[in-house]
Image (cartoon, rainbow, N blue to C red):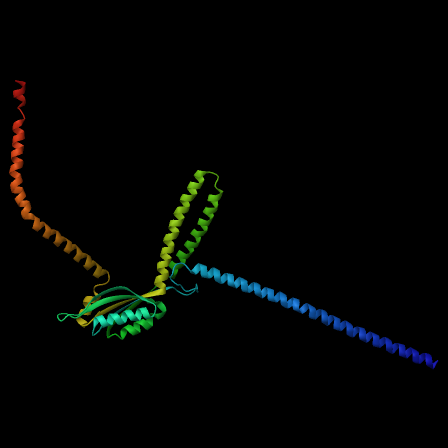
Amino acid sequence: MRTRTITAMVLVLLMLLVGGCSMSGGTDSAGGDAADQAPAGDEAVGEEAAGDDGGGEAGSEAAEAAAQIGEGSVAADSEAPLMVRRVELEVVVEDVGAAVTRARATATGVGGYVSSEDVRPGTPERDGYGSVVLRVPSAELDAVVTSLGELGEVQSTSSNAEDVTTEYRDVEARIATLEAGATRLRDLVEEAPDVESIAALERELSTRDSELDALKARMQVLSDDVARSTITLHLAEGSADLAEVASDSGFVAGLAQGWSAFTTSVTVLLTALGALLPFLVLASVVLLPVLVWRRRRKAGAVPDRGTIEG
């Protein structure tokens, strides 16, 4: 009896041990399955991240392609205002020629250039003066203005900024619309059933292309004006000459120059007329009697109508 009881207890213990081992093996198996599934999840996340990177790259390429119209660079941030800045300086210097050379070097040193230049070097009888128009990167405008102020004694400084954001975005949107319409017209040309339809579509396409070229040219101008600021530098060796130099620009200056050109043209015309007047008088004295004589001779050669009838 006791032996059977001991045997039963041993069997129960063995069953408990076997059950514990199987539960441990099941736990390990589940852990292994979870471990096997983890890389798959990581891989999926990696693929999704790669997809996001690809989309971001494509978006950046599209934005870059949309922004690259012409050489001028415009801020990629659509929220940033697009400003056209202009500065005008009047500076008294000791030597106009040397000051112009330094101003030119300052502009080219930051990637700018001289747009126009009108300089009259000084002579023993008159001080030198002149004006230089510089185009410099807008990011370097303040630094360049500071450097130009060191050329001499600054008499006056004026600046203005024009916001062209609305105009630029409008031109940009119109370009996109026209390009889409032109693409559609090209597709229609390929699908046109007859020659007349093709000709009509090509005429419309030519009109769209002309408008598109004009808009792109305008966008190029705006882009360049935003990317590069304009500095008008008036230089003189005497402060009294600055007023004359500065008056050479602007609407009033243009009106004055136009009137001066008109009066000069009239003066030249009157001078030529005065030079020709003696010859005209002489020609009239010689030719007038000849013309009168020829007229009388012609009248005498025609017979009287009454004499012919008689």
